[in-house]
Length: 239
Image (cartoon, rainbow, N blue to C red; front, side, top):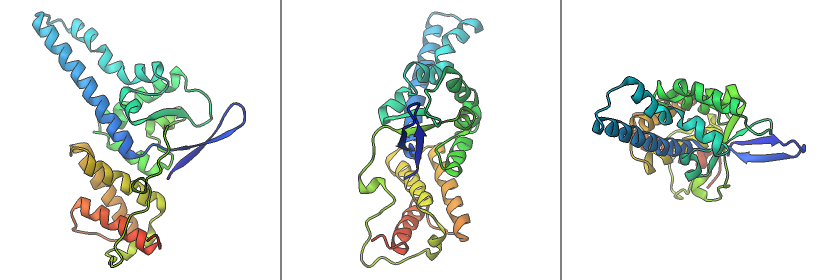
């Protein structure tokens, strides 16, 4: 598990588990559903009232554009989606995130998420090691889990058959971090409805693993990720 050590004002180091990609994608999808439902309701309401003013539409759209910033300021680093999956925004230096930090995250959100279908944010999180997208890097924040995970399915470990055959011996070039990230992506693909964002996330993960292992595979995406995870467990002696 990726973890961050945060030094509090009382000089006490607290260890947090970084929120996984799966949790962040689920939270983002929930927040997207909420904001989209609001925007649709605003459009329908204005149409029913026969209001066609650009100014009126802009005013009615403010909650849509201010949702993430407003929620994180008023809900102590959480949106409704983050609250549902029990993750929150924290400062790496142990201080309480200020309005300016949430504002930086909001300003860079279009680059991280909106304009790039989430790809910039996802890639940055994958390579950063502290669960930070560009907005987090700028604000000195990250997103952590509020509840520690203890299930085998939530760790790098995987149940293996005694007769397991290794398909990719090149997995010895990977690390626990690589495989944990791959498992987060796999869980997202399997448990969440397929979307352009989750599919692209999976393909980016596959390409990153292939590059690091120095190999390529024609296996379907989900089968490839499952095979790499099982092979890593077998080669690393984690039966």
